[in-house]
Amino acid sequence: MKLHLLDLGQITADEGWFLEASGASTYSQPAPPRVRRQLQMIGAVIEHPRAGPILFEVGGAPNARELWPEPVFEAFAVTGYARENRLEVALGEAGYELKDIKAVIIGHMHLDHAGGLEFFRGRDVPVYVHEAELKNAFYSVATKEDFGAYLPHYLDFSFNWQGVSGDQLEPWSGITFYRTPGHTPGLMTMRVDLPNAGTFIFTSDLILLKENYEQSRPQGWLLRDHRAWWGSLKFVRAMAERTDAHLVFGHDPDVFAELRKEKFYD
Ligand SMILES: [Zn+2]
Image (cartoon, rainbow, N blue to C red):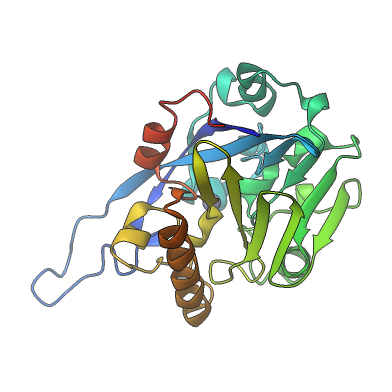
């Protein structure tokens, strides 16, 4: 089994989305400066001996500027998306073509993690996503109760959706999904146990940045269920400490840059 990390571009947005109380005014500082943070969009391709090359998350759509509603792009501007960040080019650098991919796993369905499903439209590749997440994504767009986080362009019947149920599933040996809600109701953390490099834990946006994890600091405006988030954080922390895992957070650019110093892990 072999794992490559993929650089799928960068987003820049107000830190208040990611860290609780960032930029909040206080008695002594009634007008604090606002901080904008650059976030990394991340994918991973895992060459599994039985399942074949599988892909964890797909980043945003290549034409986000056209597809994302203006207020969404204003809030979460895609500020880095060069040719090498396109999914098929990033895969190509790792030695794969789109047509090699046997399955796609989506940790959660927000537009910057599932929008790149455009690359798989009409390809009949199974797309694994938690049942609760798929339902919530459709509901959120249909009712407009969380419109903008999910977008309609990839929420249709032209993909080979495979719902994951329950709290835990090991579909292929050494690859396990855990339902870890908080950021969204059906977010799946993925654990990959590699023979030499050890355990990798992909948190998707349960943990956006290392501050969420290292300082136990909840997310800001992107948090949907505070209580569930704490439970999921403690679950992932216990697993990471038990296995001495490499943690790949949803968007942390520094953690990603450090891990990307290795071309691949096996
Ligand atoms: Zn995200």
